Picture 1 (cartoon, helix red, strand yellow):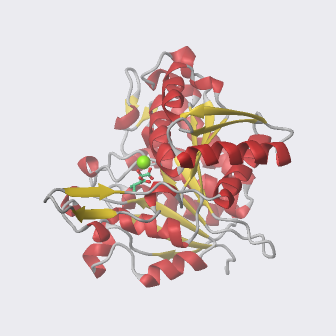
Picture 2: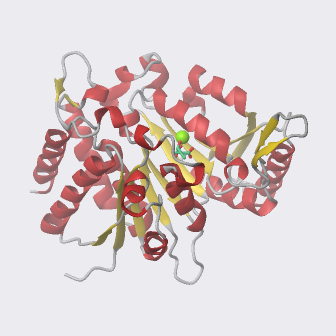
Length: 371
Ligand code: IPM
Ligand code: MG
């Protein structure tokens, strides 16, 4: 069956290939049971690409990503690549994809599944039912701005430096995405920066305030310093609906929010570009929040749920297939509710299962729900 859904799959390193493989089983299931087909291409990224081609991302794979309707990404990195020169490190492959596909909007939902509320390091009542969305600006700020470098100083010492820089259009476009996301949720946005010490933060706050006055009449906007936000996330996380912030603060705060849920192995993310006004298409890449977990790679222990949920975000945001996404999420809830757990989310009284058995059970649940 010919398909108009072009998917580039980039498994990467560590547990990446294992969890992506489980999504491919789900895709097979969808072809058989839902008559949905994807045109799937596979590529290499990170250490896997370095081993094969001497670079963490070839120009060919980069071009494939730009031409795909969506990219499904696993994870990159591993200790064997730690000593590579900066530009050859596995992470550079991911950063190049983000930059060249202009994936400026990174959606990182942090939600607590009912069956998992006791897994958090916080008390149950602080996190039960938690559902917040961290929106991280992904193509600007200190991750990319120039100048950056390491230089020798006349006195024989050295300096290392980076630049944090945001322009008003960059802030406005991420701000608009925040408002749009909030409209489908509780219509509340917290904009996070450090306007008390950083000029880029002053501009961020001013620009968000103006954007809100012009376009956000239906949104409740408040501003918060990043350090306070970190504290509030562990004090009373349910106060938040959408948090919008820059690249670096978003990196840090999203790890913090992820851990609140007690299940890093269960959190997906979507990175989206701007919508093309004529075709309505947008570049997109979906990846789990967790990394390559080299310590458990190859052992069949990885939790496939974050990758599965990343795929369900892909269905929702790139292919408008909310019904299928809902179905997958419901099957996952069901299996968790039945007490199956991979090692990372194991609790007393539950049954520890491998990656493959977790997936078998999810497919069985899907079979039951659709028969
Ligand atoms: C993330 C990761 C990346 C980042 C690394 C792997 C480059 O931590 O996606 O949060 O810092 O953005
Ligand atoms: Mg990170």
